[in-house]
Amino acid sequence: MSAYFWDDPAAILYIIIAFLILDNLWAVYLLLRDIHLAYKTNKVPSVISPYLPQELYDKMRVYKIHKGWLTIVNTLLTAVIMGVLELYFGFYAWLYEMAAQCALGKWMEHEACVSVIFVLMLSVYFWVKNVPAMIYEKCCIKSLQPRAKPSLCFRICHFVVDLILGAVVTIAVVVALVYMFIGLGPYAPLGLYLQSLILTVIILLLVPFLIDPFVGKRVPLENSNLRNQLEYLTRQVGFPMSQVRIIRVHDPNTGSNAFFYGCCCLKRIVIFDTLLLNRGKQDLTQLSPEELGRGLTDPQVTAVVAHELGHWRNGHFYKAIMAFQVHLILTILLFAFMFAHGPIYQAVGFAPGLQPIVIGCFIIFGFVLTPYMTLANFSMLSLTRCFEYQADRFANRLGYSGELRQALLKLYADNMAFPVSDPYYSSWNHTHPTILDRLARLEDVRR
Image 1 (cartoon, one colour):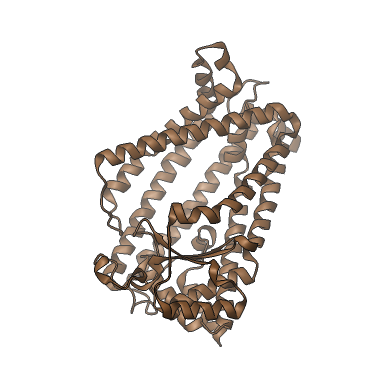
Image 2: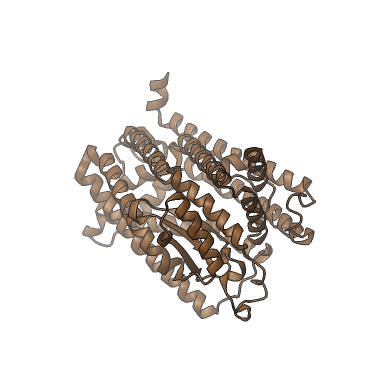
């Protein structure tokens, strides 16, 4: 029976469609639970009420509900209904044939050129498919973070630059992918893994040096009292104070944040200046009215850094890298098992013997591996939430649980993060525990 399903294109098609429907309906169900809880919780939770006015909470609640319903409608229309129709009627095979017909010369008939044309056409199609939702979100859902609108000329130039860069990167990736699979043959999945591994190493090496120019500008810490507290804390745990960086972010609407990153001599604790009280500035006339009073006091900032040091001391960076490598290896193994199987290509409309490389990657990673990808994502999110609890316990052992509690309350209010979330929705979608869960755990470890 299993061999029948594995070799029958029609059966494979129905299984892929079933995966698509079940995965998206599960996501919709979780989101409905979250929306239902938001409808029910019309008062600010008492623990956060001193930091979050009821009026602002109501705006956040309406925004969350409105955005949630938009996501549900868009998922059902574009992902489920249109996705099923695309698979059932062989849309991707038809589009690939259209891309092949766009070849204007003999050299353009090469699989690499046809694949580039296909991917560019597919990108345009996906963009057009999501335009209604983007327009509705822009025009009908009022943002909680008012931003100054750039000029029309700037927006057009930004769009054109993004379009050109996106096209260049897409062409380079697709051409490299096709030639790698042609050159390596049956060993191509191994090449794909090695390529991913090399890219990961390059990113790990470069990101510490790219934080300053792309996120913001490194600035000295003007607050001597905070510097003394941070020096005492880092000396206490053996972390070099020179690797604690203050970054003045380019976008003042960037959320208040601090994070640990890197390993060995490349490790960093990065603190956005939006985390500091009044952005760490002595001259308050330089601040906009919205920035006045935002940020944390010195003891609260120190408590947040103690939490980040918990990530360092517990080796969370290394553990996350290892978990990602295990996930990557399993993904490549599953991909290698399915990539050369002809009925998968026939299931989406291709003639027997026609197995384009880019189609194999797109269909297998995008549809066939959906169950594994969903479960792997759930596992990775569970791991990151476990890391957050461990880092909180580390800060508690250093004696900062009270300050960390106050810091979390202030941060959630400053960042306009809605404090209430359904536990099932959160476990499948959030990298961090909800604030109510973190506060409850902090109370438990303090006892």
